[in-house]
Amino acid sequence: MIAPALSRKWGQLAPREQHLVAAAAGLVAAALLWWLLLAPPLAVMRTAQEQHRSLDAQLQQMQGLQAQAQALQSQPRQTADEAGRLLEATVRERLGTGARMTLAGERVTVALAGVAPEALGQWLAQARTNARVLPTEAHLTRNPAGLWDGTLVLALPAR
Image 1: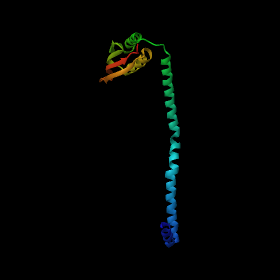
Image 2 (image 1 turned 180 degrees about the horizontal axis):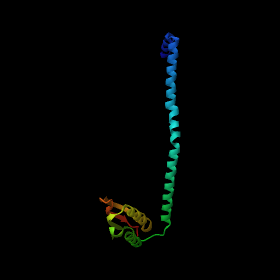
Image 3 (image 1 turned 120 degrees about the horizontal axis):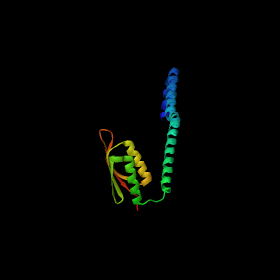
Image 4 (image 1 turned 90 degrees about the vertical axis):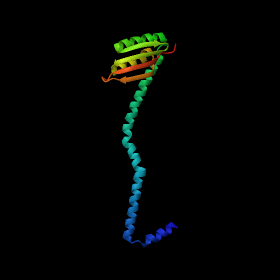
């Protein structure tokens, strides 16, 4: 029904108008072809290299974490008492007078007062690796000097 009406309308147009309508239809078709079929793959191709680099960096990070986890798993088991002693030594060594440690069963509370962020980060990494403790709670605030105050609660390895 529509085709005969369009055919009749097309026939009534002057040849110049027919060329203009055909050109406009061709332009619309080309634009649709570009936006729907060509532009999306080209956008993917433009960003593929950057995504590849990002994924490679993530893979490297994951492999590093895997190696770290395997190293921790391969270490001999440690008692809570040994972990407590190791943790106390790292607190004195890394945090100095800015930290006070309290041991209660399988939980360790470390009170911090004016501890530098770098020292806290290094201490947490060393405590995780050497004493195999896991942070369970953290109540930390930064004081005006940019140092950490608050408490950390850590879980010792199971007996």
